[in-house]
Image (cartoon, rainbow, N blue to C red; front, side):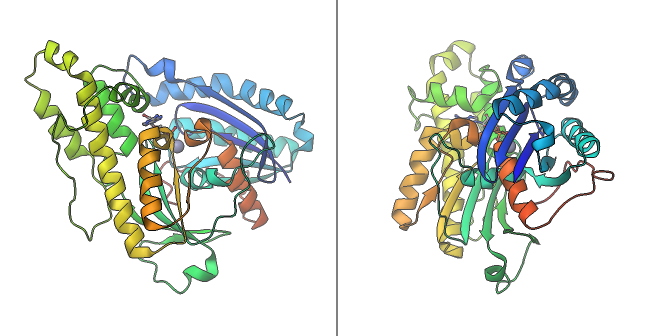
Length: 356
Ligand code: KG4
Ligand code: ZN
């Protein structure tokens, strides 16, 4: 099966061509430079940038893959969640192509894509993995933070569904999620507060390397051991009030310490709730994905946790597979197509709040 995948849910215009779950071509056109002065993504600017770039990105991907539109079997596109104006560009483009070239179309959930980024293969370095299910997946990015049980349908049927699940080739059950800001969003906001620019995660990671993570004490959000949900907005507010009265010189002098302390506080809660979920649900393997998993310190801490729990952990080995890309949407599309889970190209619409 040859799949053309399109992803425009946030600030990257992405396309990929896959043969089943193997990537043949992958192009990401990042809009980061457009948002440096805003400190975050501006939906209307994102929409215009996607519109300007999408055709070129798709054509470059097809060329890289040595494929033409005629050779494509299925078009996979991110339907949600994400920014409505940004999603609409990808969805409309995918629908037009599907109608023009008479192709089947699958609508993919962006979060399912992040989880399945651990399934993406290629012929130059991405490993073939056999991942035992049920797995517990932690996915953290600028838009979401979720702990999800991923299983095969027959296994899940025995368990009660407390928060709803998506039926299909794989099944997903959200068991913990953020009640306010996402993990990446918290890092982005702290970076903005410190005047470090956008996106905050990578800058904070770099600066934190030289800082003392114990410099500033920050609260432990939702310390209750029975609750698996996250909350990051209190952490951000507490950080803000702690440094609010500081003169600029003092902030600059301790920039690395502040970055390290804030990063540690975010990662502490990510790990703490994931640990609780592992104890509660006893999965066979662990998965981590989403933009924040590009962070080497977080990866190290998650590997340590997995060793303690004697469980295998899988994270995308390439940086570009952690952040937004269309290869992960293509793999999710591949499994949905195997499941005959096609959408109608005439009526398909973006869904900015689509739950996995
Ligand atoms: O998955 P992603 O590319 O887009 C969304 O779906 O949101 O994630 C972007 C988020 C941003 O908040 C960014 O600051 C964060 O991932 N991020 C990082 C790193 N690289 C990106 N956070 C921590 N360390 C990094 N190296
Ligand atoms: Zn994402």
